[in-house]
Image (tube, rainbow, N blue to C red; front, side, top):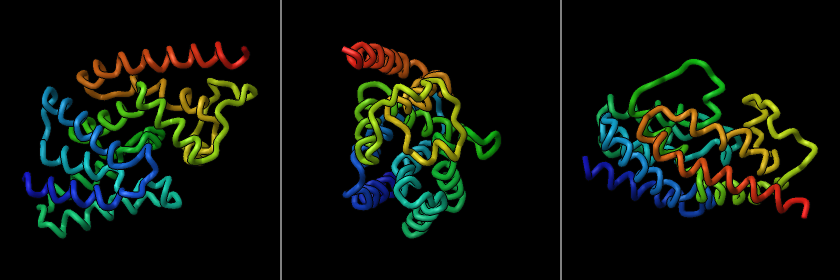
Length: 213
């Protein structure tokens, strides 16, 4: 088990050495640590959780022309190459395929406690101070505006609009980040999210005070 996890860690580290900084190996390591903390309280299959946490962003669709099959395909291929059993591979592949925030627009799909733990671990890294830093880094990467006052903050958004990733970064707080606390699956993650969510609110309060100085 530990040998498989180490091999996956080495593989992911190499694959993501040139990744956008909000979705790089440091993001992966934080998600792994979050997943370990949540699993310690919530249970689940630790091998599946650790493998999926390491592999969850192995080929994020937003950096691969929207290809949502590439990540689960790469995860599956590597796990097969190191001899992981078929049941574990099936579970990890489905976590990688279903973890993204954009999947919440769909009403059905694969579910498991392991998916919930890894998804919560990933979403926790999207809020708090790290979440703010990641949001603005990605906005800069995409050359998105910081804020456009003419766009209503609470404007609804559908899956296809979300997947374009071209909205102002402040709008992203209302499209996604402020929703995360109430979308988490596990009680452990919800407790971990409280302080991070409050930081988002404090940041936005300060941002709007400074916007029209």
